[in-house]
Image (cartoon, rainbow, N blue to C red; front, side):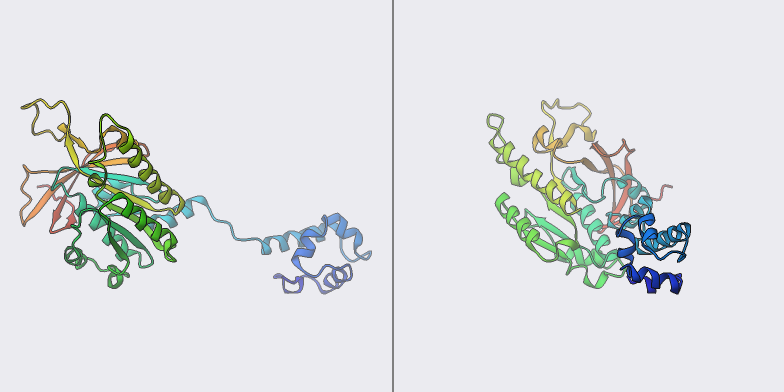
Length: 326
């Protein structure tokens, strides 16, 4: 920036004197030596050292980039989170669905794992028209019709292009998933990707794990580390769906109605490969009516947040709602 364009303007006689010693831009004034050195080079009587220091400070301020508070940057990043719009559930998800996190969602069949994530992803894409999400389907069960039905309940700036920005890839084996991730890494739209969903990881590794060999565990660990690299490098939230299995040994008849007799599948090694595990339970004893079901979200384990109380929410045809207790 030329000094003649500064606001507030520098006096004309000082501009002329500075030009005589080769100082015509803000860079010349700020990086041609100290203020006292420049003052000694100026013709005698041009200005005082104090006035020159004040003008130098003003030039430095106008040439500097505007600063931002860390708290403001944190608030700006909040739209990147995956939220449900259900206050109680969003409070439960606080700190879990932020960028660079890798979250396991586990539970029994019918507990709402896929439905919860599909709802969170669609709502996010509707609210963030510049974002996209990669959904890796490892079972061939993803339903576009179901996604369209859920999408009808949203009205936001990105509603018309939501399904265009939800990239669904079928990958039935680990190598196929690697190919999908590599294609994503090389794509031109990598900066727009805010989330990756792997639904689900259980069939990818369950046949590889063995109590007498570590080979399958090594494959699983390497895969999860690759996912974490995506999460941290590209500031992405990664969700992995995992099925459930019985605790062993299992004692028949002992607290059979307690969801804690079940645990996430893939063994104890998998527990340490994600940041947290959200455990979902279908509240079969409750009757929500109107073809709705009540679900319980529990924080099974977390390395990133404090313990949380269980959260109840209602799901009607794939749409999440807050439970109105009577």
